[in-house]
Image (cartoon, rainbow, N blue to C red):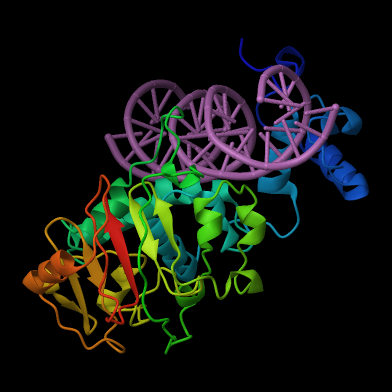
Length: 323
DNA sequence: AACTGCCTCAACCGCACTATT
DNA sequence: AAATAGTGCGGTTGAGGCAGT
């Protein structure tokens, strides 16, 4: 026996909301609030709607300060950046874009932004075969609810222990991405209040233990010094024109076998491991072989992934690991 | 004008998770 | 500890609008 439905399906109206319904809902919530109970709200407000439907309508359309219309370039960048790092976690992405809803961003990504990136790729601005591009465009979203995304798993026993590195101080504060504060605990725990909690600059995120890492998305582990550092920034902090434009959210992926981009060495081994070496802090110039060497000489952990620990003596900003 | 195909986006669905009893 | 209720999230759907023929 499954769980009881949240409302009497036969007695609720479905489909588009009428202006009258909108007005009723808005008036009621402005007057009484939600009362912390969406299920009971429609009846009290005199609406023949499911509570979930009311909630959705309020959050996505009626609540104050909702921003509709065109997304700015800046918003594009933030979305791409976050998508590359955490995947389709729209509510978290929405939390970084005031006035935008997760639904909005999801639709925007699926209908426009993805195509935009495709175009860039056609124009050769993004190497089509790059791991980054692939991850952005073909990020497999979990459709099977029977196997929930692993970032929700609160007791991931396969999560190995990692060492960490010296904290990094940012030399550029101009770019927002440098300061997007992902909290490891939030992203890896079962906490469902991430929207409310993930606010830029919120004090509670600073100074997390350096040993922390978080599972940003099914098959990616992300590391950072403090949580504000465990961001998805470009380590050179530059984007906006030319090549850097296409870096958008790509910075945390490593490709090109040592090819140079924006004065920054981006390197990757052939098994997908990579290092993002911050050129302004780490004058490292590793090639593929050296990376392999580094990997093989590092303390590694076991598990069903390409194991990797970075050299504690290095000052690289962060490391991502691909399963 | 009528038809067709494509696109957009509001809304729904089902599930995971938390809180409460 | 188990059952139930409520909430939030991400994926999917389909009605309506639009452009092209």
